[in-house]
Length: 135
Image (cartoon, rainbow, N blue to C red; front, side, top):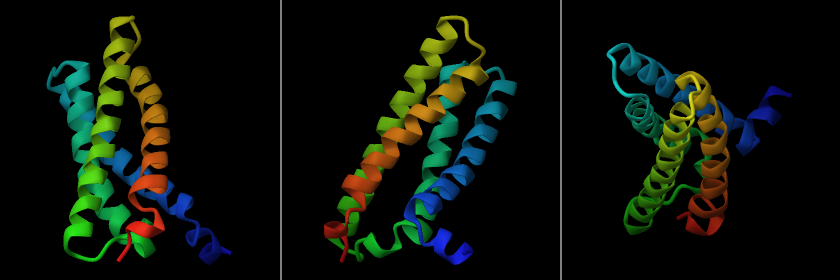
C-alpha cells in the first residue's frame, strides 16, 4: 500500500513541497528574527525553498518526465525557475498585502503557501514535467 501511495506523483510532490516548505518557513522565521521586513523574509525563504524543491522534484517526484541532459533539460530547468518565480511573486504579494492590511505575517504566509502551492503544482504538472518534455 505504501508503495502504491509513493507511485502517486501528487503525493510525492506533496512530500517534496513539505520538505521545501520546512526550509522556506525556517528561513522566513529566521529572517523575521533578524528584523527583516516580512515581504523580504518571505521572498528569501521562498528562494531557498526553490532550490530544495528542484532537487527533490527532479530526483524523486517527476522522475519519468525529467529531460535528459542537454537543451531540453535546460529548458525544463528554466521553466521550473519561471514557475518558482511566479510562486515567489505570488507569495511576496500575498504576504506584503496581508501585513499591510494588519494580518500577522505568519498568517499571511499561510495564505501565501496555499496560493503558491496550487499555482506551482499546476504549472509543473501540466507544463514543465508533462511527458512530451522528457528525453
